[in-house]
Image 1 (tube, rainbow, N blue to C red):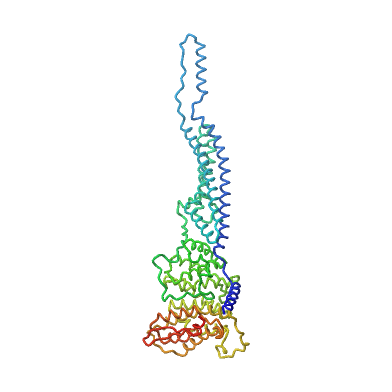
Image 2: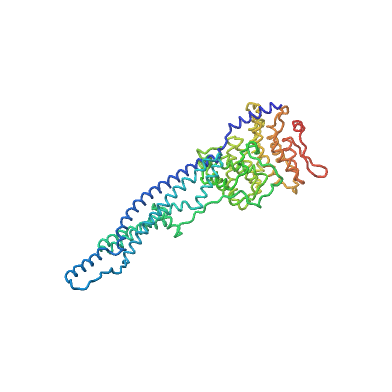
Length: 600
């Protein structure tokens, strides 16, 4: 027996490996982050290299002019020499005259000389300061990302990159990079100011010509910056224009979305009844089969996920993010929190991405060409689990839920038309859960069509169709162990959603008798479960273990039930190898099948 179980597990693992599996979101993030990092470093290095070259040449020109203008701050030695020669000549002409002493006159530099040198020295100082800042920025940016590659796992690399990027933004490295050219611009303004003042004292015509050119250049400079601040479509973009934008506040602010944990401390409560979380086509999360990182997702992880979800289209990146979120919600069960604004933002992004998959053509909606159906279903599985684990407010999140309800109803009809059992089961589960939240009974009243659509695709389809016509197809082949196992995982979430919907529709005080339509729907639901049961002679007789556990919790924690809900449980639950029983005192308990007890 043990050998057969081992072979079955190996066969199942080989089959599951062939199934569609979303990529690791951290690997995708690291791939995108590497490109962003490369672009950031290239842009920084190129701009700083250009700045250093300009600062070097500009400093040399300024220093050459300072050598000449500095003479105006000191007394001229030629003036003292002339006075001394004049005194010697007078002494020779009048030898009998008394001796005279030639003294230096008190020297005071002119205001224009002081202003000229002040502007020139300021220009040189700003130029050297910009060069120093450029060298420091090149060193900082080269060192900041080096530690990322030393991390072993993709998750640690992604978190390290996100932390480094956060540090760059918090400490204003982009603002510092944008400020350095402005320092050079200021140095250039001081240079022209000093040049104009200096030329005024030398030659009036040259002074007027240079001052006019400098004024025109400054006017165009300011005009271009202001135009770029007022008109978003203007191509005049450089750091000064962004500075004008921030100074004038003429452009609207861009509010960056801040992603927080799924729930904040104090809002976590136990899920009612502590029922297991179920996901269509995917079994309940198991510690040995799920990555260890999914048990400790924190704020940084959600920042990483949010960065990927900013694009409104179904890509491999968005698929990986929502699948990681779905598995994290399953692992976090049975805890559930009220949906925070951050989670609502993620949910809205997911809905927007999913809505982009539809296209209206030929009078009907259809999947947009080129969109992967597997990726759309991965997103739908995330919504299915979120409806079970997150307390979404019916009014506050009405727009989000109704948008996905419309999409799920469309996908459900598409699945019926294409005879795709996974699509029918998944989207019917979502529709039933949203209908329960808003107390809409349309799906429950027409559930028999959905259940029979599934049953006709099962190992044992109905002998007659909905119109009473006999199926002329060849007898179905015997399903393998893996196919039965996959069917049980696929249909269980929908049957559980229908159980909640029946309980909501028929509360304990509803004493309506069981009528024929409801009875037939219940019988069809039971038949859709029974058709995939393992044969009695099979050594593996544990049918629907997760669904059975959910049924057990619901029945044991519900002291009073309506006749219709009791009929539903008494007919459907035995298909999971457990029977609901009502004791004489009205209490509920569950009797397990003898086959199940013997297998244990």
